[in-house]
Image 1: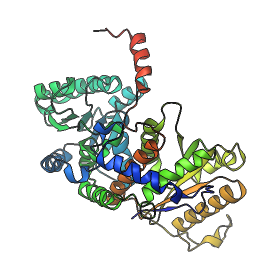
Image 2: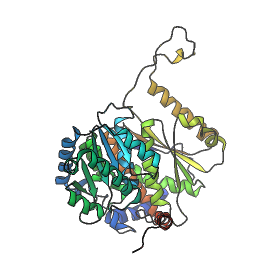
Image 3: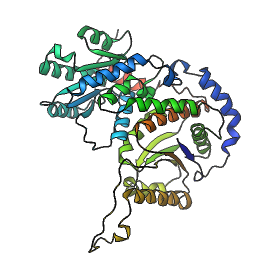
Image 4: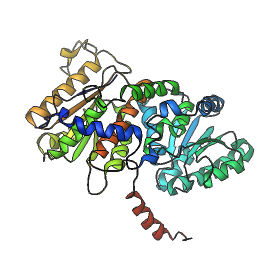
Length: 426
């Protein structure tokens, strides 16, 4: 399903030399004995997820589709990045979907929320609010404003059919409000953290409403769970990737640039940055996750990558089959001097740009390149890719004695912000 090409990685150690360490940590992951083990529900989620709730997601999505000219997804971090990454990867940026999705609750920008309100004024709106506690500031403020808008527009009774809450099973302010108002609710599992949650109702509810085949996502997740449940480095590309990251950091590369050649993968890169950044960046350790979209960013970042300070390596996500392709036409006048490409496909040109860039960066620039290949940008591939990165993240973090499942540093800015806002203390 997925392949890792390390032939351009400029590794100075062999991947196989880490086999003994990987054997040890593979047991830690699948037996859930490591740091943060109470947040490892994702490990076997492909088998243990609530099948009845999954069917209810499909039923609710079918029911609200006709009401939704606009789907508002109200959440921040893992409560929106995964869903947005999946929707854009699978459906593209201009899919023609009759439902428009707008992501809110992920910023304090007054201009943004005001413009969203103006944009949806005369549209039929459904909202999925996602928060385990209900008190995440960005999300709670946006939900307050948008709930008022919807109640004024539709009335409280109709809002029962238009507002869906994904939250804690039993507690929290959002759960209490949803029960009081009669909203449909779905559960955020206690043992799966936000950045791993796209495979739960957190991601599946908005995906299903947008018409994404979530059964195929779960099929890809299941196959990855089965196929990547091996410590054998010759058979597990996710663990190979995890080891390569450690080798390359040992060689002095402290920045990893995630590179895609498809614009619809830009938000997947943002999701990947949260996954690696929050999981690994602790105790003065870790690799800084960065991203770029080529060939676009070759005209801005390319100069630094080629000839700047050697602080980064690239991880390229290669898509073997594009969602769509088209042929380059012939121009009788050939004024742009592009006739040498007439009859070729756009995707072929894109792939040649990728090969030429790898050669430039690796051979001339001395920049290591890892290449992860997926067959396409469809649902099954997304589900498989999620598990690939989940298990690779767990392995690569445990290799440097980091808890992959907490984010204590995130709380510091919140404490400072609450003090400046004058939030009452209990």
